[in-house]
Length: 199
Image (tube, rainbow, N blue to C red; front, top):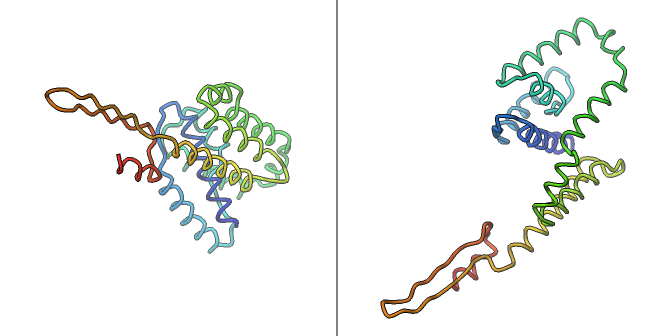
């Protein structure tokens, strides 16, 4: 369960970080999960807790103008030095201040303009987005169940969209021969294979 939650949190974190990145780079989910797995093996061997990506560090790096992996290495090194040398001072940081950072980061990821944009895209994107956002925020559901609920609703809309006619077909007869135009929809899946093959 911890591995699943940590993996989902990591994938959500890199998705959110890619959206916040001003350079619009894409992070490899496979590479991130491999690094997390190796890190968790090493952490377990020395008696440490499970590790995962966190949006606060990533957004702090982006806000500070960081552009390379060196920022993560420096951040981790500074964190290790602080935990080893000044744990008493770290415990003096008010939890309310840490909560404020998390709330601000959450607001940036789900600000009203994003809801407006998703609404304009259409109900197939907007409804799963809103359900996931609300379900994750509900205390008794939590992150894993909230994401799972949004995932199920997203699959429903995806399947429903794929069951519709996935192509535009037009046939024009002429003396020189028939001209056939076949234009596929933006999203075509294996569910449409039979009807396209028959056509």
